[in-house]
Length: 98
Image (cartoon, rainbow, N blue to C red):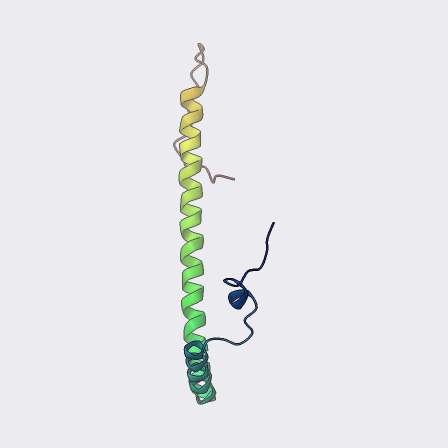
């Protein structure tokens, strides 16, 4: 059962940030208010370019992992097949993992 006591009440019921946090927040807000529209547009464009590059990098790595996983599963299936008189071999191409 949760309860309030004199140690946690100030942390949970605080409505105003501490002085150092409030001053840092004001500094950042003032700096953001004084930037020109052209500089803001350039910064946004640069950030979008970086984000798009990172998304592409993650997607490519994900596709590589899927292909590697598909190849490993194909090889494991070959090794785990019951041995009969028929020879069944996996193809040497990588599967897409789908």
